[in-house]
Image (cartoon, rainbow, N blue to C red):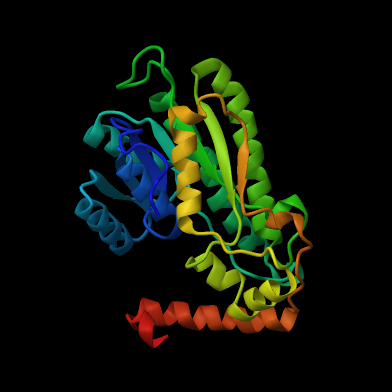
Length: 297
């Protein structure tokens, strides 16, 4: 789809994205780059990083891929230093790295709960904390009068309640709280705008295939005439808006991008269906790891 924004709206900006090598994160990387920004992507899988950077280069977008785990403070420090060394500045931080899987609360181990908290919540804070020195007004490569932008990717799961995702609901509730608190403190002290985006179900993403199998989506469409799947483009356009001067007076807000779907009642998925789906996802993941083409899955 054609962008409603000028192609140079982010010209001269540098953006670092965690989880920016695939899915929604990659589309945000692509659209920020297409609108003038230089892109640094942080992720744990070198193969994914290389593919994403190659794709961005093919579009004429300056981009680098940096291996790192948001759960490790030393990785955050190293990736940020590498971004500054390569591009000379940092203007935009997008926290899109996340973890999720379906599991009833009684079957979820504390370790599994903590893993998602560590990636989504602690990882978001760690990246924000270590990026502060580069994002605040007067930071390296900045003029004294400007501050940077942080965009945290959240969800709508915790707005009501969601079946078998207690770990993610808790993690994203924390992310929203982080967004508001940093917006209050850093907006006042450092002229940094901190906002979030809460996507609904987005077509052609790993999250949808894991958490909303085809039969669930089909039944939802049958019973809810207004049910629509969003596109990765929708989330990326929200990010471009928040990262640009068009959103210069927006701070501490998590923008819900789900067509209003969160207002409807959450759908029940039986525990047996969860187990079957989880096993199918696990088998698919294992096949991908050993190099089975997606077309054969």
